[in-house]
Image (cartoon, rainbow, N blue to C red):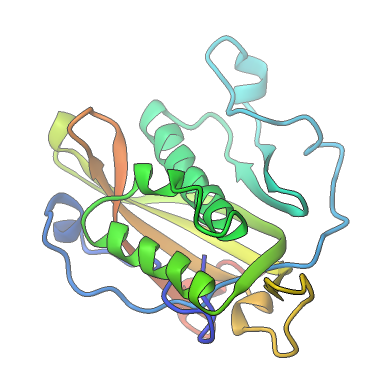
Length: 232
């Protein structure tokens, strides 16, 4: 997710493996935010999708599929899942999905829902809190659809509980709109992230409970070469 210049800090991860495994990370880069208009893009493939494929459903797991997460009235996150991801890749995509959905839920609930903090730690926790706070302080909200697609684990280090990884994903928030929270209407000047897709990278490591957590956010925006792969 990119946070608009008006809206504050949403950080996306272009990571160095050293950052993945370490608790001490380099300062994060400010990112634009992306709200969207209520989209009319509910395809039959998306309808009813609610959970990643399970081993008990091999046919579904063998092909790409689309999941839609309803965040709040008029707000949703759509995830384009790859075919047959392994267990760790599945878990990392779920973490990034839950972060996006949770951060938007925090904004639309005026800060009451803080579930997004369950999937971030270290630098990413501070960046995520700052991103949400920027919306709340400026009395901004969102409406529309954020789409996550082309997920790719671009780097892995370590093994077992010490394993770290970088998950890259393309993000399209062009169907979102930034709103005035008081009126519920789109603001006159929409931020950059409502126009072009960008590449979000998340450096992840395993938490004390063995689950994956995001430790660092970075992003690449067009015309950066890394973001050009998100054009379609």
